[in-house]
Length: 328
Image (tube, rainbow, N blue to C red; front, side, top):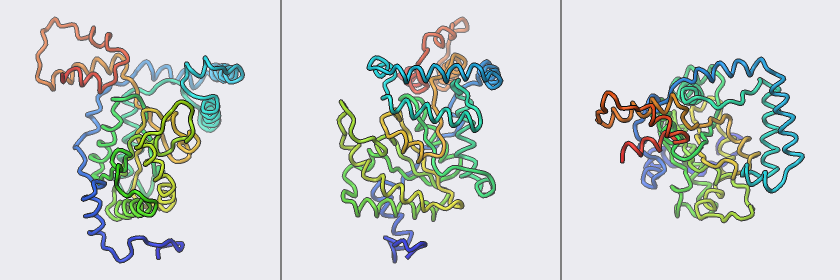
């Protein structure tokens, strides 16, 4: 038996045999080599100035708070259709915003892509890559990367694995499929993954479509997919294994989601220690993306080619979309 009377489901099995099983079943994978600098994006210098102005402008934040309260008080089906969230979900976000503002202040502006890169480095790469940093500095056991499709969430996850030299465990719903169908088998799977992850630390446990794991269940107008049903079945054992993670264990659970509002927001906020929003690139980042990716592709543009027009016209393109355009 393990600590606190917990039964070791793999008692008597060597770590090597567990590793072999996880490799054979496709949960322990070789991660694509991606560097954090591959997430291309510029500093938002104007955004920094605006952030500083926001911090010293408490009156503006109070005004925003009053307007949000008015939205809640006057909630109707048109507001729900526009925001694409329910009133309860909006209220939970609002209460979380008020709580964070009381603790350390809260900035309303979107982060720049450079800030996203910095956050991933500070919350993911440094604690996993350095035992000294992990043991001495505050750190999180889990991180959620959320944002629109093709915004670089998976790339950043791979960058965390590559830069920190971690092992890569893929616990995504799409990877579960017909593996480990019943409740006992799911409990065994989660036990094996976390046991091997701790033994072979540093490790990253990747969960794509994390919103399916923490789905709110009954939602009108939304059908539950097969992957969603399978994903929700691992939640109980996932929570149990997270509780057993010790402060000294260099294991990070990284979730990705393009629709976090489809999940149970309360459970999502409780599980993930930090959340990083993967943004649409601003003009400066789009300009840098076009220049860098075209050059990497080996194309040569005329000296008088107005690439600024491309950057302007591709507003609201994600970095992945720009990459696909250049590739094709």
